[in-house]
Every structure is written in structure tokens, then in C-alpha cells.
Length: 570
Image 1 (tube, rainbow, N blue to C red):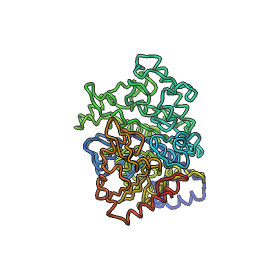
Image 2: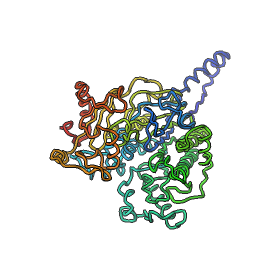
Image 3: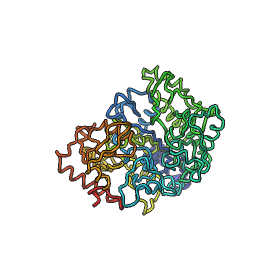
Image 4: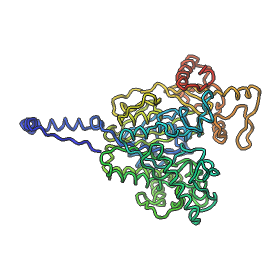
């Protein structure tokens, strides 16, 4: 997708020649300026959006859990993990050090990423059946792309982009992917079941069923705005419902990305959008080790894929897993972090392919995560769940080595991509994001946002650079039960709670409430500058701040028609 320049006016051309070498040199310098970062970026770029799974930035640093890192000086650390390709991406682009997600759990965040809309706005049938209009919306892992809903890939298709998908879904047919008892019924005709313990390596019937199920999911995803669909994990690895296949395979998904990039010559100058959702580092923990090694991660058999067991695929675009472990050890790094170097080589393979296809300059690469996990912040309004790493590289449009320290929200990704693609958003499409294009082009260094809005289950929050206000409110029927002194179920035999967990997933609620002592409090205020771990609820010390943030929260909630949330919507 190169910018072409022709010049055919002989009168002007002869006038240029008459200027002599110095004049021609001056004009050439001027042209180079035009085609430098600012001018060249007028073209609509290709976009590759890489989304890791459950990954916090290492800021604040966490000794017990390695995170996506960038070179020292970028605010992410860089001394614990060998990640030269991610480091290259960061040094050649922009690191955004205060990036956040609006809803910190897998499916909701992926919905927001692919629509630019808050999760509660989904038109998904199951979500709206659970929470019909007039009731409180409770977004968590129950949000999906509505059938035929306007979304980012559909809008890009309309603007002439080729759209592609690789990797984890978790936002399509949630009720089917989580219930294999439905496979093969009218609701999921074509999906085939198999025993969970059957090994596709030795059981041909299971292997064939998984192969056919993969094609079912690829066809289903195409219906939501994707021209090309490669390797798919319908949900988490566990939701393959096959114990031997419950292992990460970075090479399988990476190969699919490279296969798509190899198709670009056929489309000539037609730009593309590629969504790549990795399974790393969501459970099964790739750093978990037993007597046989990291058996769910880098020591797993690479033949296990989301489409059964395969030995016919060429993975030579990455070093072997054994070589990666040796590389990590030789560099003086802890081998339990080798899974990150493994993923780093996936990024490296993609960057090399872009270089080989002469696509690098015109491609915006976005590397981020669906939400964080630090201090069990997943499914909470704490920064451990909201904060994510965010790196963007676009040689034609972003000055290398740049940073942006101000608030960014994952709703902004779609808004930015649509802006760059010159897409006119339909008037009736509520886009919640702000375009980051002025930031990327260096035209604006001041904050684009004064605050960000967040939602999960029974909680909502407003975050500013200094403050965060969290409100926990329950529907009236549940509040009556709380007021009557009823106790609510806890996870795995733990003592019952005086309040429900914020989300239906009791496992996540249990761990989040254990590690965040203010979890159940109805009103919370944190000074993020002086208390980044959000340990001290200072709600009673700053009444003026609380009034201001409550008003801001009320303003955001007013945009959700017929969705009550306590006193904020009365």
C-alpha cells in the first residue's frame, strides 16, 4: 500500500531543472518532509491488533508474576524477561503508560475492543435475555457480539478493508461454546462432541471431530464481519472440552497470522485489519511447572491445536521451544518466564513477515491485553484489572520512541482505527471511544480525556489521573435480601458473605475479595497518586471530590437508556 507520486507537467519540470543542483536539492528535502511521518500518514494504514489474555503491565512492579515488558525507561520494566521483539515494537513506536479497559473481563473487553462501545450496550441476545431493558445491566463474561450488530470489522469492510481474525473468540455463541451438551443439537448443528479424556493424538474420531468443529467456528465468525478467519479458539483452552488439548500453542496461531499476511499481494493496495487474540497467559498457567516441566505451556506437545492433533504444520518461522528455553537461560533469565519469550518470538515472526512483504511502514501494530490480573483485579474496578500494557507502532505515522502518559481507554482503539480508515460512523451508532490519531501523529500531547468510565457486574467507576470513585449498587430485589440480613454463597466452602460477589463467577469474586479488602464497600475513593495499590478508602476525607465524581458517573450512566443503577439513574 505504497504512496505513488507522478509528475507530468513539462513546463514546471523544466523550471525546476533551471534552479540548478542547489534548488533541486532544496525541493527534494521539502518533498521528503511532506512524505515524513506527518505527510505519509495521510494514507489509510493496515492494522494488526494483538490482544494478549489476562496481562497487566509491570507498573507497579509485581515480584511474583512477570508481565509484558518494554525497555527500561518506558514505564514497564524490562529486566526480568527476555523480550527483544516487543522491545523493538516499543522503541519504534509509542508506549501508552496509562491505558485502561472499560470492563475488566475477557468477553466484555473483547466486545468493547471490536465495537468501541461499552459492554452494556451489546445487542447480544443472551445478555439482553438475562438483563432485559428496565433492569440493571451486569456485564461480565456474558457479553457477545450481537448477530448482525454494527461493529468495527463491518464498518471497515464497508470502507474497502479486508478483515481477518485469528485466535481466541469468547464473544460469539457463549451459550454454545460453554455447553458441549448442546453440540449437535438444533442450536449448534454441525458441532460434534467427544469424550473429554479422549486423546486426538491417538483417537482418530476425536481428532476428526475437532477438525470439523474448527471449520464450524471459522464459518460462524465470518458472519460477524470477517472476510478471512484462520486458527480459532472458541473460548478459553478449557472450553475445547478436551483434556489433552488444554495446552497453549503459540506457533499454531502465529502461523495463521503469517498465512494471512502472505495473501496480501493478491489484494494489491487494499488495506487490511487483522484481529489476533492470543491465549497467553490465561489459564492453564503457562508458567505452572510439574515434574514433567511446563506441561501446559512451552513444554507441551506442539501437535495439540484447536483443530485436533497435527504434525503436518511447519513452525520453522520461530525457534524451537527447547531453543527458546536455552536462549532464556543463557541470557541469565528465569526459565519460568520463558513463556513470555515464546510469545515474544510470535511478535518477532509477525514483524519479520511485515518487513518481508514490504508492509511495515504502512501498518499500525497495536499490542495490548484484554484486562489486567495484578492483585486479582480481574472483574473488579481496581487498577489491577483496569490497567493494561499498550504499545502502538506505525512507522508512517508515529514518531519512534515516543510515550503518552495520559488516560487511554480500550474504547479508543476502534475510534482511532475508524478515524485512520476515514470511515463515517453511522449517526445511530453510539461510539464511546475517542480517536487517538492526534496523539499518534504528535499533534497533541495534552490529555484527550479528563476521566474514564468503567463497569463490571454490580459496580461502576470513574477514574481521573489522580482519583478513582467506585460505586457498588445492587438491584432492588437483592438489596432487600441484604437489608434482611441474608447471607450469600461463597466459593469452595468459604464462609458465606453478607453481600453477593460483584460477578456471578464465584471463583473470581472469592479471590478478588480476599486480595482487595474494600471489595464489598458501596462507595470507595482512592488517591491513585499516593495509593496506587488502592488500599485506603478515603471516601470520607474528600467530600468535594466525591460530589464531582458522582456527578460525572451520573452523566455517563445517563447514556444507557432504561438501565437503572441505584440513585444515579433516578
